[in-house]
Image (cartoon, rainbow, N blue to C red; front, side, top):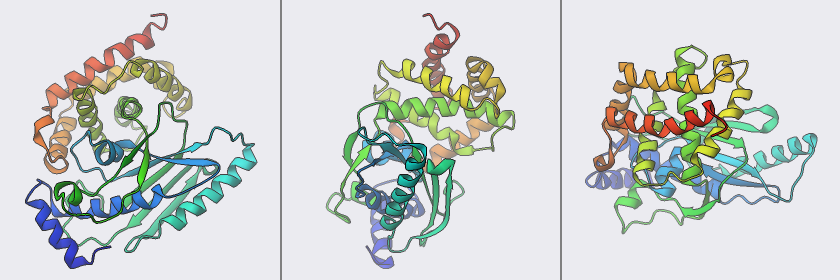
Amino acid sequence: MLNKKDLQELIEVARQHINLPAAVIEKDYYVTQTIHALSNIESECFRLVFAGGTCLAKAHKIVNRMSEDIDFKIEIKKDNNFSRSRLIKELKEFRSKMKSSLIVPGLTVSEDLVCNEGKYQRVILKYPCSSQINSTLRPDLLLEFTLSDIRFSIENLSVKTIIESVLKEITLFSSPQTQCVSIGETAIEKWVGLTRRIIAIEREYHHDDPTLVRHIYDLNAIKQAEKINADFVTLAKSIVNNDAKQFKNQHPEYSADPSAEISRSLTLLKNKPLWKKRYQEFIETMVYNSIAIQDYVSAIKNLDNLSKTIIASLTHPQQ
């Protein structure tokens, strides 16, 4: 753990090599420590697997952006078959292990919310921020844990700070191997989440979320890296159909005709100037390598092309 002076000095040196604000590099330092702390958890019942955009950025290194939210899936190990009451009990014990692991110098818990019989947990951590935070950066660390099946193979990867990535001679932490959700599975979940939430926001079923544009950037980066595999359409269709059942009351139009709602989301992304503005702001403040960036029109065109096959499979299930 660096003292404040040494950390700020390293941040300034790193900024000479990467186009990111000091606040982003500073926050990444604490994000990385948190991921390392959770990577060391051992359990007979569960496996904690790093997921989401931060996993794409820091573990798979397929997106060149700051990603501040920390998502983990809790997977039940295959030899366990719990009753409802036993699952609640085991999840409670597992949360206790996670809480013990999250004792990181400088971090304090400001919120700890548990829902759905322990199958979902949200933790907000305060961290010591010495740099001025821009409007796109949250002033705390958001952690989400969700009990979930993992459909593709898990990968063991190392996770480093931005400082360590750009200053190769620097080693701040002895980083453990972190179990990670695959790129393909993450891409599918991002596509499904984006194409459902855009229209849900428009219908005022979901709170507005300017950061959804990160999924547009991520999906384009994954497509450019040719990491969208043959299982994409099949699994996306399965998740869409499950979401249609799950959100029957909250989003009846999606439940009745998901392909139509997905198409409406894509139309909103094409035609509503607000989403283009948000995408451009995101690119300017959160992305640190301009080589792979798609302009908004091209990014949405790629997203539209990716979506056509899935929409067709939903509309014509026999194909």
